[in-house]
Length: 78
Image (cartoon, rainbow, N blue to C red; front, side, top):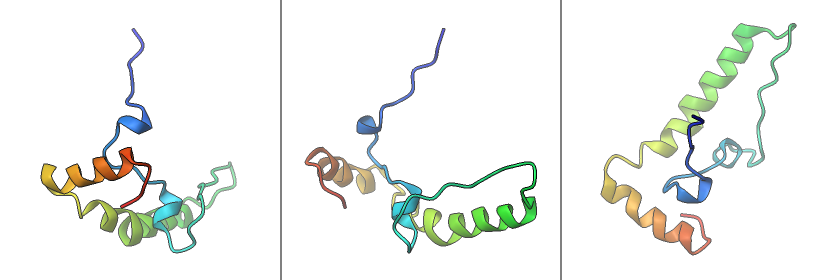
C-alpha cells in the first residue's frame, strides 16, 4: 500500500527554505560526483542553524501554531 502524505494546504506551518533565507529565493543543494561534501555539509548546517531552526523555534505549542492556520487559509502569510 502506498503511504499518503499530507498536502501542503493541510499543513499548519509551511514555508519554503528560500523564503527563510536572506536572499528570499528558492535554494537547491546540488549534489554530483564532484561535490565537496564538507563544503555542502557546512552550507546546509549554516542554513539550518541561521534561518530554518529560528523559524521553527517560534512554534513550541499548539497555541503557537493555530493562528498560522487561519492566516494561511485566508491566503496570507504570518
